[in-house]
Length: 492
Ligand code: FAD
Image (cartoon, rainbow, N blue to C red; front, side, top):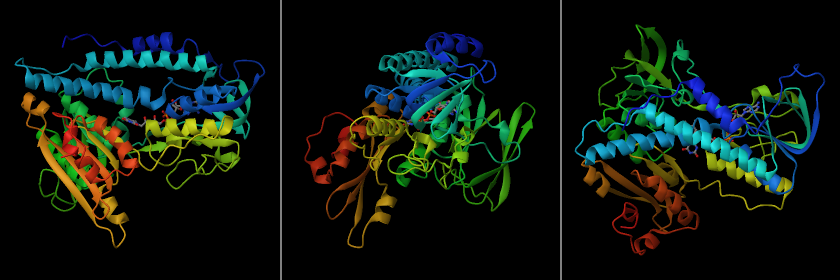
């Protein structure tokens, strides 16, 4: 990979402005313009992320007059700080690792600066594409910070928009580390703006964002240590698959410390000391020695400890919009808040915080408000992935969930298969892959499918349809396999 100089942040931003934000109406800040204009709309959407863009386009397609307001770059978290940049960066790391295993050249490591240039180019392309599609649909896109001043009024800069319906699609933000020195740790948002990498990093957290970031960074040559509060990675995923992933990461040199409660961060001679208390054996099998305090030093620290819905500054509480126990906007099955004209979708409400979930909610709501009553997506069976290496794909119940949900007469069985894919044999890594099917032993129905392999997310997406339709283990076993594939292991 040739080394290119990464563009400075200011240059990237002006490139972004020149491409993505040109066609967007900029609203002057309040006070800069005398008197306020009032615009009439049927639907005001606040936030041009996955949920907001989907809802705005669909509502406009039904003939509604739609105003979409965004304070930052179009596309929201997914395009700018989430799915797209992280997946591209993980491709870079993974492909480089595969190549360096297969080819006899040395130093097959992807260059971070070069990868970031390509990620930014894709983001800029998406900004233009999104803006173009919204304009084609007839959506008015305003740039600025919105607040809701009445159940039918939205303020953005000096402009007031009067609308019958308002949609809050303002997403979520990373939680900050609530310990002294917590501000020294960056978040996942920061990683995508880095022009160069630290030599070492402490990743705090064990959820999917922490795991993905740790995996990506280690593939780009950063020495990674993970501090995980729980006793395993990926608490919400199948435990056996999560344990297999922990092994794979450890084999690649990522040091994992479980039951580690971070207590303090300190700046120390250009590095950061992260202090943590550990009450149980860690991932390396070392005894944590009771409730001892340990310190790990690295050039940087990253906190990926969860995300919180962001809607407090919109003025909604004063209008009577309620907050759920988890911090999201409380909505009913139709995504309507306690204030009848105000709806909310995506990461701003409780539930699965994923791009396709936010988009499906937004589209369904727009159909319901402005078109015919649309078919509701099945939010109970949602496939999900962790784009680490090896990747994880998962749909349906984990073994633990299935056992907990099973009635007295039911028995849950798991079919587990471990194998080394041809890809890994060719690359010489010997990395094992894993498939696990969770099955109702009486009916044979497959309740969950979990997989660890770089092909897993693609396979699981398709299998999700079969699961929704009630596929049985016997159906998989009697389907002729496509050979040689990773997917055939599901059917064996
Ligand atoms: P967002 O996409 O966050 O959009 C909200 C928008 O509202 C933002 O652009 C924000 O600037 C704007 N906004 C907020 N307040 C205001 C205001 N007052 N005025 C104007 N604008 C405002 N999901 C997946 O499905 N697959 C993945 O692989 C995946 N990877 C991820 C990786 C990371 C690191 C992160 C952080 C998230 C990832 N997600 C992934 C989750 C996914 O990005 C979110 O679930 C999704 O973007 C939520 O969409 P949304 O529309 O609710 O909010």
